Image 1: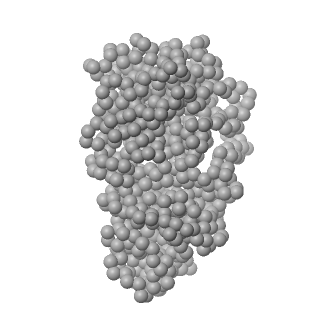
Image 2: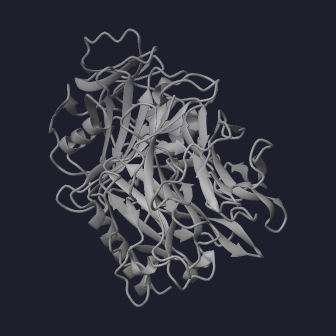
Image 3: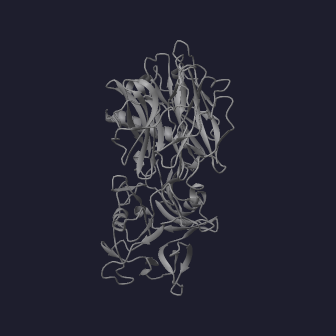
Length: 615
């Protein structure tokens, strides 16, 4: 690819991303990454498109295993002279073994190795830097957190962790503007009830992508995220937020400018704040995620199912049909990736990966992205052409909260290779421009919409299997997992029709999803071959591996219109505003599975949704 083409693609990508975000402020859902620790990402465009990008960590101080730490004293410690050793946030995380690390207080940057801090610092009960009339975060052994302006008279008995900053940007829910210049920013906040602590970075010095913020603007972000009080920490080139990576290394979530101008450079800071947390578990209660690990089958209730499709095939490249979809909600922005085929269809590899967007999950639009030429025009919503890339069938898009920013969106899909549909992967920074793998993630015949998602330290992958070789026997569901988004081991069968099922029943796609800690749900489309129809069944699990059927009757039957013959539930539960309720999308067809061919179908298929209550 020439540099000119690469530059054009980049400009198109930025234009498309900015066009969708213009005037919009949104924050993705909180995604659990450790026990009591969740992650969210946000974007904003106040005046100029794409001007701010935020990474946020929320810590439940009541969760078991949560513990805070800060940079300890250096060797040869002398207060107000030599207090800490400078190190990158990566080095701090590696040295302490904590699960989250962020830069902390201001310090004497002129000191190349050992430095002194601006305000109060206490590390695991030991004084590191004395009080100096600064606003400070104080945390005791029970993880009770508060902000206080500390002086020499401040009673520090019982304080286990302390870190200071400059300027309270949020005081009792009221935003304060203390630093009107726009720079990269770091902040720490506390919720109104004191239960949650927020660690937040806002990128800057990246024109057109994220240009920094005033402290008042970051105060608005802290309020959106759930904080009631918030403190400005050291920003600029110091701003860095780090987690451990799945391969045993470290992952920087934001884009630091450690030399004050160059993205992805890191600075050795004098102060850091870290959090210890346990892995996500499936056997104990977690209030943060809405209840207990299930010890008995959940009860499901379908409500508010759409009577008419929310999105239909209506574009020239959709004049045969639309197919599998994935929907991700990022606060006020709902994003959909779906497949489409025109009447030149020969195989499932000939499809297009398309994009749609909504502000409420109901009214969808198909933006003109100018990314892929179809029939001589780029005036369409196509992201990837299957014919040009070797196939993009059965996609599933998901957010990977612990990946580097360039790989935050991930996707699995299938391509025809060596006489079978093998599983491939892709990664993207924004969900628009994708880098697709050349080698399969799983060299196994998996001809459907496979499902993958990040679950703590592993990637779970649910695939199609056949009970006999070479597309023989019945369609069944397989499972495999890997600590990396790379080669997956051979899958094992985890769901197949039983003796109480009709003889003509196959399990088509799995639509597996993680609802919350200790509860996984599968909504497989059951293909009744004798009737040429598909209905949605259900299965549940406490560990994501061993699934149990929820009866042998469908939880969702065909409707009377666009979905009268086939239902394909989409993976990915989207939490609703009510507790224990989730939105699911599905593709409906009004022709039977085997009757769905270009000669009979014309603009076939629609996408609907339903609310699933889980009790």
